[in-house]
Length: 504
Ligand code: BG6
Image (cartoon, protein in one colour):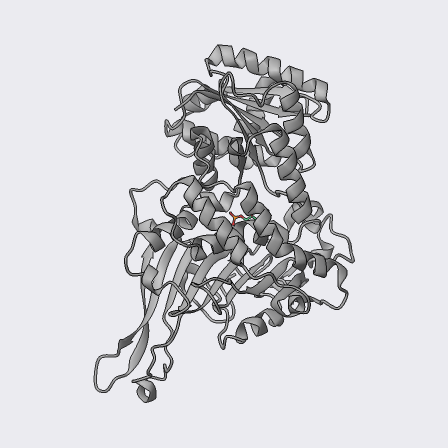
């Protein structure tokens, strides 16, 4: 692996402490990093190298598992810090000088990753100012740019951002991060589908009745109200993370497992999702906002009472969308995707419901006529897979019982499951963009959500429904899926379903 300096812009921010430094440390512990390696934190806050090390390594967010104080100290020696005014072009000369010194000291061959963990308004500025210093040029070592979400605020800003970035960096230098793609279980969707002989023949409109994806969080917006109110559930979760899951579920088999082939199939898929427009938006895109309630006797704030949220806010904290994919595989198969804050539990899962057998042979005895098999893919937590099917109850007659066959990742006891950020950062270091979003794919995903966002903003007739904190969202979301004569699967712990409410 090539040596490098990993530069974090926005280094005094929360993500650096919460995700980036812990992930880099874990890679260091696993000996996954090259020997010649350094991290340079860049931010406005005035900190010395020592103060930066202390801030990130003594943070309560840094929880090194099984590391000795010597190992933490050794890692600390690779961390450096440079304070600059990130909005001032001249200041990037200081970054360049500092990088040259580190490059010599650690023999990193001029290979730099610039990780942008800053407010999005700097996503255009920083690359432009780096380029002014020649820090985009690859004549002496490679240069890569990693960009955090949100990538754009809507379609036109995403297009604009892509264009600006490409003024200074080539597409193959740009890594747009979506941390869901770093989750083992999201990657495993592709392996489940394409490494087994028996799923794929059934994976189409002939056998699948509908696809359901639930992403639930029990937390509210916490102290992120200021950010969240300008975003909302559709931008925060759906446009990126959930559409990526849709892509893994629905894309065609790639011709090889390399980055180009996989990303080509994803773009095709995004382009095939039928846009929801006009009157259909009110029918097929349901939005909700949590209102105050009590959970386990404790009073819980409504969204509008959260810190940083305006009292009249119309931002959605819940979205449920029904859509179709216009291609040969999926024609007429409804996809239902919902996401929300302050739902009963934290879970992300995909539920695939298969069509009933053509003839209901055991109809009268079973009480399970029109049995529909389900495949549940649990993305998190209690990651695993569950197949639900009918079995004969022993004894006379043909009574059929619903049974489950399941696999839990935790059964792979000796396998180390890396954190999403660990996997993704390592890929950027290796130069493997497979699990990063390509520019055209981000634009195609925005194409789908843009008309919905636009209508939600401008059409006063489209309602925003309240739902009590701790419930599964507004009843209109239930009515949406009831069109397919089913209810949402409201998942609970350990892949089980307990009807309407989960353990809180
Ligand atoms: C982030 C969103 O991208 O993903 C947050 O901004 C959300 O609002 C988080 O809480 C969820 O990530 P995970 O990995 O906990 O499901």
